[in-house]
Image (cartoon, rainbow, N blue to C red; front, side, top):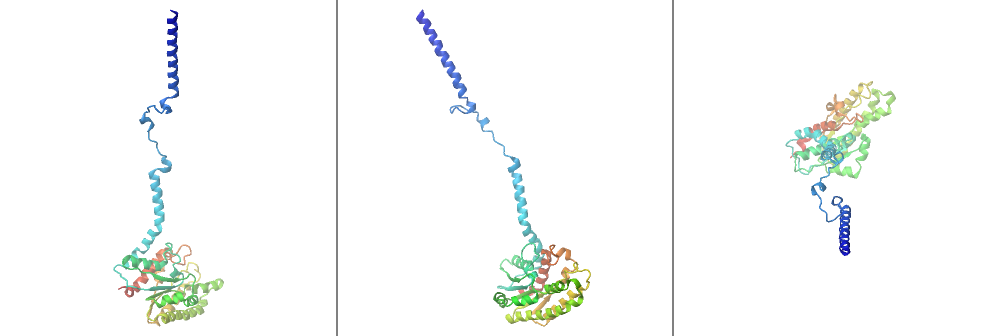
Length: 312
């Protein structure tokens, strides 16, 4: 009996030990904590998708930002297309002569100051217009415009090897000059400006313009020369001198008279293009130079005058 009782207590002790062991094991290796590598886990619960932060990276926001950047970057090129779209219409069916060489010389109007598209003013618009219309063309204009040039300064620059060489090879030479001669008179007589101040400067302009055209002819007797006229941007600055309109007209008359003395030269008036349209066509930074729309109007007028000469 004593032996049997001992055996029963031993069995009871073993079962108790096994039971406690199972409890401890179950607590330590709970499958929900994923600490037991052999545990099975509810995959639907664990693999539940995580939502992205829509405030930072939503596709709609990214698309809007990309569109905004694209619109900003394309604004200049889009504006440029609008600027010379009508020039393209006037150049329809225009195919330029092969190896056509055009050189532009002069002041800031040749350089393209005021053109917000940074496309070189009327020069760049002419290039784009012709190349857009004629897919076979590789048309460029050698641009020797320099802001602030007067007739005497242009004469000095014409002595450079680069400009003189370009003129020798040119079929056409486009010139803008004279506005800074007028500006010099205004600056030198600002406090007591009168009509009489302009007469000596106008005669000096006549002589130097004559020399400019003669120099071009000497370098290239076969080149066609086109002198682009002046417009009047001064009235808004000098309302007390109504004669400024007359002064600009007289300087244009001088230009046209000098041109008539040279068989290969022509005068292209642009004063009527800007008159009454200054607010729309002048650069808002100074209301002196044309803006891109003003240069577009210049390009149209120039293209009308040179079309027959440059086409095949």
